[in-house]
Image (cartoon, rainbow over all chains, first blue to last red; front, side):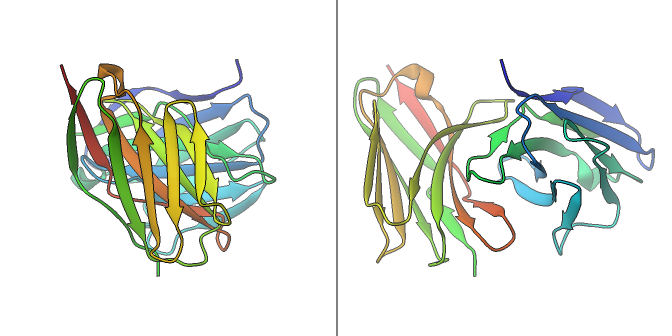
Length: 112
Length: 111
C-alpha cells in the first residue's frame, strides 16, 4: 500500500545533541511537509518542500533544518535540541494538484 | 488572519450522533478539512469540503459549512467507541500551500 513512513517512531536524544528524523513516501507526491505537535496542541507547520523548493515558515527556529535528497525522502535535522523541542513530529505529503495531505504516524521525540 | 477554534471536549453515548464544531477567520480558505487523531498516532484525513459547497455527506459523516458565519461542523451518526479520538478541523489557504489546524476536540464515547 502507498503510504507515508516515519522512522524511528520514538527517538530519545540528549540536550544539545543533534538528531535527525526521517520520512519516506511511496505516493510519489511532490510536496512534503514537517509539522511539530506538542502535547494537547494543534500541529504547527515548520516547513515544506514543493519539489526541490524549500519553504520555511517565518517563526520556525533556526535550530530546525530540512533536507530532501530525492522525491521519496525528507529529513528533519534538529541541530541542538532543547527541552522545549520535545514533541511529536509529523511528516505529510500531498500532490501539487490536490489539496489533500496524507500524514505519517509521527516520531515522538524526547529530550533528556 | 488565520485562526481556527474548536471546543476542547465532547462526550456522547454510543449510538448517539456527535457534532463537532469549528470556527475559522480566513475568508479566503478554499478547502476545509476534518482529521482524526488516535492516541500516539498520526492524523487521518476523514473528509474535506470545498468552500463553494455547504454540505458533504460520506457514510456516517456529514460536513456542514456556513461560509457567511465561517462555521464548519462534523456530524458523526451512530457514534461508536472506535470514534473516540481527537478531531481537528483545518483550513487550506492557497497562499503558502499551507494547512492551519484548529485546537482539536477530544471526543469521548461512553457505553
